[in-house]
Amino acid sequence: MKRNFLFAWYQTPRGKLLKELEADYLQKSITVSCQQIILQIGGIGWENEFIDCSLYKNYTVLDAKGLGCDETRKIQAKAYCLPLQSDSIDMIIVPHLLEFDTHRFQTMREVERVLKPEGLLIVLNFNPWSLWVRYQYLWDKKMADSWGGHFISRSRILDWLKLLNFEVTVSSEFNLDSVSSKQGKFLAQGHSFFSTAYAIKAIKRRYNIIPLTPVKNGSPRLALINSLNPSVRIKKHD
Image 1 (cartoon, helix red, strand yellow):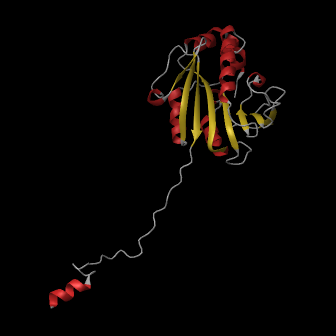
Image 2: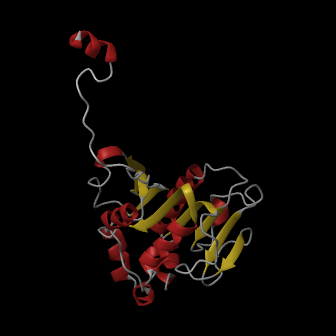
């Protein structure tokens, strides 16, 4: 997993603007209680710009190289093999990790496993059709050499979430001058070729199967007319 391209891109003028937009977006998206457990998979080094770790004591950053700001609690582990119990996390944030993860779908399975039912998931990714991102990648040789990732389209992420029984609630785009949100039926179809990155919010759903009770006696029974009213039969015989 090579994320040097991501960190180098954040140092560019447009990357700094994207960083500010994403920090503001994450700060507004963290709406869970301070007592609940929040996990960030993939350290980015500027977590203190969108989370107050002195207030959120249960905020943890999990990264294979131990990346993350100094104020956060850290776990050094692989994203595709989380050393956490199932159904133990209230909220998971995945900022620009899946693009550099060769086991990205297994990571998504692990996210589904450790997230509690009705827990919140936030995924940040680059827009694969962004001309600015591809231009920066091709222009800067140093960044190109460090690139070891794979752009993932939003439609593919939506397919993965649907397969894992997630309900997508909001899909947002970062256009470097504004953040536009798309909800409802236009979620899967709406996208912009000019947006630099996108964010997806989803809720883990847990569907319980209701077993069918077996029928003890399936033999049909015949019911005679007026069999439930003996007085009528007696009057007819008289």
